[in-house]
Length: 193
Image (cartoon, rainbow, N blue to C red; front, top):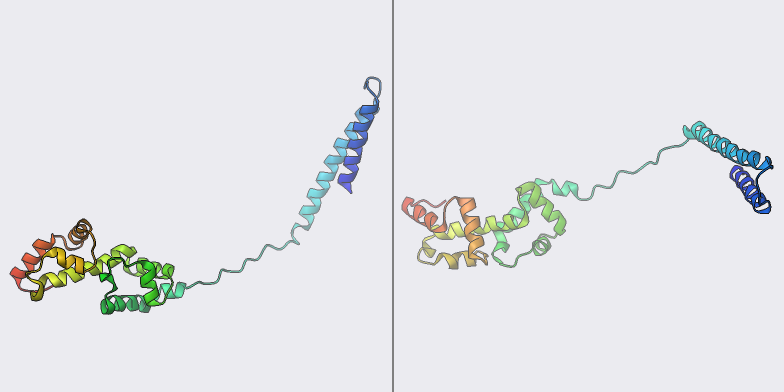
């Protein structure tokens, strides 16, 4: 109602100015304009004081805590052990084109959940996780008497690596020596790692 009153005063003032071309000698314009400004000021103050007065009656918006998705599963060591057991038993890492989605399907969990388990429990991303198992497979075969005369390229290809440079980079970073050096050291020592 207050805004309607203020708008009416402004409309009346605008209409009066249109009818009268000269504002000289008509003091009513001044008073009508001032009345409009003062009524707007009073109206805004009334709204502010009313809002402050009733502010204590407002309740804050209550937000429900988001449901825990599968966080309990993601921090579950048994799930990490299940992932590790599957990796050791079924050796899915020997598939050169293994993807996160395919491994998650094998484990019957979502790809995001699997990624979080790998990140939180094993401290690496998916590709590093897979390549660590591949490197362990290569290390095992490099010291196995059955593969002693086999070329290293055949061994790393069988373990799931597609690229020689990726294999060499990962092997050197994880083992601290080249595959040839590792094979030689292990054969000389006679003890498999």
